Amino acid sequence: MDNSVNKKPHHSLIEHTGEKSLAEVNGSIEVPKNGSFWRRLLAFSGPGALVAVGYMDPGNWVTSIAGGAAYHYLLLSVVLISSLIAMLLQYMAGKLGIVKQEDLAQATGNRTNKFGRYALWIMTELALVATDIAEVVGGAIALSLLFGWPLLVTVFMTAFDVIILLLLMKFGFRKIEAIVMTLILTILAVFVYLTILSRPDWMAIMGNYVPRPKTMSMHALQGLDSPLYMTAGIIGATVMPHNLYLHSSISQTRKVNHDDPAEVKEAVRLMTWDSNIQLTLAFFINSMLLIVGAALFFGHAQELSGFHQLYDALNDHNIAGAIASPVLSTLFALALLASGQNSTITGTLTGEIIMEGFLHFRIPMWLRRVITRGIAITPVLIIALMYGGNEAKMDDLIESTQVFLSIALPFSMAPLIYFTSSKKIMGEYANSAWVKWTGWFCFASLTLINVFLVYQIFAG
Image (cartoon, rainbow, N blue to C red; front, side, top):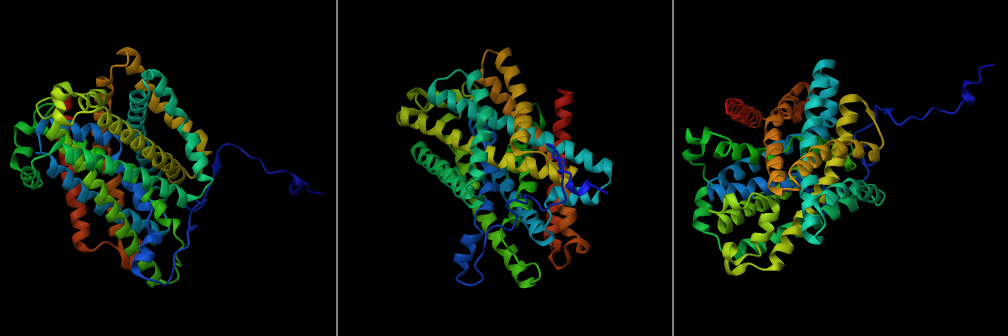
């Protein structure tokens, strides 16, 4: 007699899975079928906020404020173009998730050979680690500024943020969205206040949203302190690869009847509204980061190479002028901490999405977070030990990670544009001609910038 039916199933840390993306929350949120447009949009609002978080993480702070301090308002056009590219790509990612019920990692893993799947997985994991490094540094410095704790101690403390996320997951995905949105509004309020107090030149601001030839002149292609390097850093900090995977997954958290074409079409429309509204908020925050850097710190770029220097400058009348106060510097540190914690939540979710989608197995979230955060903490600790907690070196590390994200971005853009432009894959929801060719133009332009950048790095 076969007793196999009586045997207990074997449980291991690694589980092979063919489940839906983020299966525990997939299709878990009801959406009203009737009612006003705004009521239905409110039900769909949330995934856009989690995506927008990646567009205002600590990496953005360093590159945007440093860009303003070094080049005044010149790079505002880069912030605008990056934000428009982000809206286009996030629309494609969210649409892929709703229509195909696959996230980008699943779509790529299911349609590429073994070598391509593993190569793209490695590049995506490296991009996620680069993102995590910025979160570690930002969160650690914020805690150090607020409480005066040594940087080495606060770096280790960031490793325990996984506990926060595990607790939040027990309250439901809608609660996570609400907390993230609250933190985003906190950051927005702080920087609106800082921007108003800094009294920027509004005419110069509006004029510099239009791209200028100076940004891509021959001088701009020279060296690692050039506008091109800062441009790549801002693009990498703004259009982050992991957000494409995240959005294609969490756009599936709403319950949609896929047998009803009208309901699917409405879901895509509401997702697009949610995404664009939240990314517009992110655009304003990134603009204000650069504007504050330009209005308060232009001409002091060398003195303000780190978060700690920025914190001190907001309390220094010789730099920030009459508006300097301990309140401003404390608000800056609190906003930085909020930014780091927000990014931690989305980074952890994306790690699970990437591993399940590319490799078809998953490990417990806590273990996944320990591994990723452990890898990210290592270079931060090495630099902290080598330079005695020199925060300027930490900020150099953040800038380098953002440039790497710019280099990694085309590896996520190409499959996304290809899949969502294919009528065979997307049917009637395939990208229109202008969306398709705009996407490929952005891909080619960014790749060209990266080629110049890599050449400068090695030639330099």
